[in-house]
Structures are given as structure tokens and as C-alpha cells.
Amino acid sequence: MAAVRRINTAPELALRRALWALGARYRLYRRELPGSPDLTFVRAKVAVFVDGDFWHGRTLAEKGVSALRSTFRPAQRAFWVAKIKRNRERDRRQTLELQDMGWVVMRVWASDVLANPRAVARRISFQLRRRA
Image (cartoon, rainbow, N blue to C red):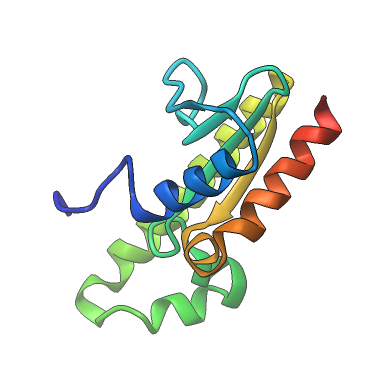
């Protein structure tokens, strides 16, 4: 697990390049904000998280617990399912905290960014224009 990158991942870099090409300027990893968003747009108060599909439970969100359980071997199943559930709960908590502070929170899946970073960047850009 030490090899798993926390910052400057390939999806983050692809999204940053796409946003920069659209003229969007951002700040990185604001530690004073709950969850340290990957990208922040301070004037518009938009926080963007690029969530890894595995660690943030995309399978759990889209297909349910039974699909997530089938991903793991029986010996580690309980540990990983509980961990991913905790991660999703932490994400929800951080999102609510940011929203209470007046921020719009956008969570995007890393695989969606890798598949089409420009489309994700356009969604974010649209939100920025709405908040301007």
C-alpha cells in the first residue's frame, strides 16, 4: 500500500492539464479544508476530489455490497469491505463539512477522468461559470 500515490496521480495530472487548457486556474491540496481537496477554485468556492475507484468504493456505490464482497478472497473480505465502507463514510462527512462552509463539492472517479479528461474538465468548468 505504500506504493499507492496520494497526490499527483495520473488522473489528477490529466484533469489538471485539461482544466488548464480551458483556462481554469486552481489551487492544489488545500490542507486547511476538510479532506484536502485535490483541486480548489477559491473565488467560486468549488472543491474537486479525484476519487480512486477502488479506495473510494465505486463498486460499492454502483453495484452494492455483494459485488464488492465478490472482489476479495474470503480471508480478507471483512477487512476490505469495512475499510471501503469507512472511506465512503469519511468522504460523505468531508463533503458535508465543505458544503456547510459554502463550498460546492465535485467528486469525480479516476477512471472517468482517464477515459475522457476533457469531458470531466468541461463539467467542472460549467460549475465554475455557474458560481461566478
